[in-house]
Length: 240
Image (cartoon, rainbow, N blue to C red; front, side):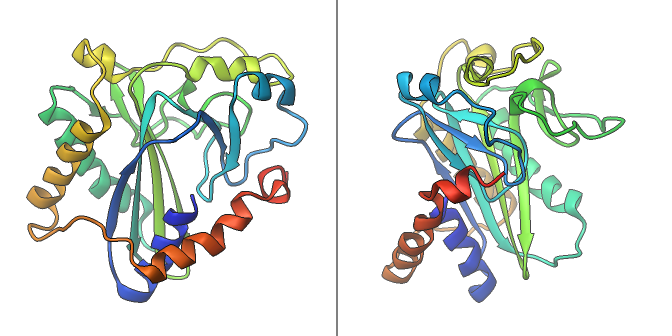
């Protein structure tokens, strides 16, 4: 989270766009920026299952980072620009990459209204413009814009453990259909480098033929280290 925010700040300064693909060293529940969470989760259950908790700078509902692949895009943008335009550009990269792996993803049709904030998992239902497989949500995404830069986070499910979130909340959650996974589509679980390479190829094909791997220089590392203090702070994680 801290490195993504530092990359967003660098996009603001340098006009640089970065697509980052990564995994998590421990199972981690990430909360949406404005999601209500204080008093809603069972701390004992989280501890027993070895699940850390962090609050994202981007919006949306809770999701479990474990059997999934996370991506982020940071870029300069107009604060008043068309949100769906940026989603569309990123979706084009995601679709190209996933389809090259044999995953027949499609963009979800606009819903009558956005899903109401709740403790339900992020993957309970697709939102407008998210990527689906046979009608079920495969990629969940959320965006944050501030002072001429944007950060979009997304999660691509490899296997389904999102339903386990229901066992972490204090109040009962209505059962939801299982989300789609890459294993559903491919009959196997691809490794992160396979998906990352497909995304990098899509960037070079569709966006920038001269795209190069990200180098984390001293300035970026220092910024991320400074920002990380907030994400480790319970006052931020459980602020609402």
